[in-house]
Image (cartoon, helix red, strand yellow):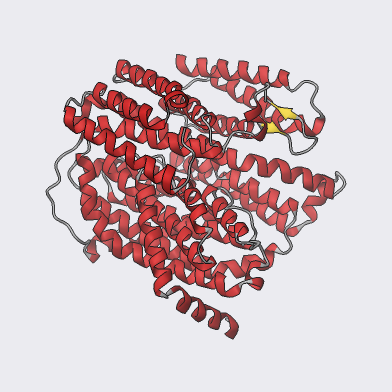
Length: 499
Length: 130
């Protein structure tokens, strides 16, 4: 490492440790955990709502605050996932598989502690990835053109195979529906209005926020309505006092911790394949390689660890891509990108050259954010149990109202809410029929990226598609995509053949 | 297995309709969606031919439909009587109908939540609620 880098790291560390910045991180964290724990409000919505506030703050403070919201929301997502079986954020979906059964068995605090330790560990991995990989990828990114970004987007799409679950056909159908939905509106080339049918709102396409809320949060609300009568048999009372996990309890799962962190980190770097994809892939892998996979889904702490470590570990990769290439690694990162641009800073390869101190302050601050999560999180674990006392009948309508506001803010009229409700009903019925919903999200984020960059690349090379393959970075990412797509399928096949 | 077939047929019909609506579009504008629409028709056909055994079952279909009707009413009322009044009514009725019968609790929860949300979003975050 060069001397200049070390001095930048030290500068960043000192900068991020000022009282003001720590305060910003704590506020961001508290808001993030709050947004994350509320189903329907995700890291993305939380960050989007904070944008107007950060406008008045200094650059470093606002970046740290947004980063803290992101990390906090991912941690907060597991609180409602474990306590209510409703993932606070889409990324916490697999956490519900084992976390919620643990709560029903009266082991909620144990589950929450595993979630906390896993989140903090994954978050630290993220922070170090961000610190060391951003400069490296930034150098690469200088050579990125439209074909490379196209390949990156295809890589993101290839993670679909890891999240389809049992039924690959249904997963593919959902992904293709997402790609078609993403093409609604004015086409990037030629300006033709596709699938608009005279509705002016559709010209700009469907908003991401209403679609995310509709497909991720509303199905849960409907499920709560559907199961309302069963409240009494829902939870077992938890009287266990538990403040910490013993080292033995953690060390027994070290393989899962490490493996999930690696999966999370790699998936994080693939564009759009953010925390939600990482957690599902990691959960599937952990279940696949486990000695007793049948204990998954019945309250195995390993499932909580796999999901939570991976989703927090993916944040680093997400942010690396956002900061060093200027391509948002996830919907939440798109908001981060917006914040940077609002401040007059162009994210991308030149970020480290133009504002190195701010960048390193953010990198070091992100390490501190995750240490703070670990410290403050113990308090949340103790407070969390009070949520269990809220009757489901109150929870369902309340969540719906909060989601509606979220969707409303997207376009500032009721169109967003209508889109959310329609998407919600369709998603709910499809989920009931065992269609996985994660591929849809992946597709609506990546669809426009794929189409626009394909045409840019097409015109750039004068329509010579073969010349794409003469670009080494394009080839490398393409090979990575094929591997990402094929690996989960092959592992599944091998398992079936041997078992 | 019936349900899967219905989904497949609906998807094929919608795709065909959308494909038709692209008639007259330029090649650049239509190739991307057309490709995926054709792919969706192929995949849906596979689903119709080889459906899995998924079934559509509900625990409390009546409650679900009533709540859904309430949501539609809320959506209808929002632009007409404003966020605060419609949310107050919606939350109160929805919570009451879901079987939570403690009047006082309900009124307190409903009003606190509505006012809290109003202040967070309308006042603090400057969202123009209806």
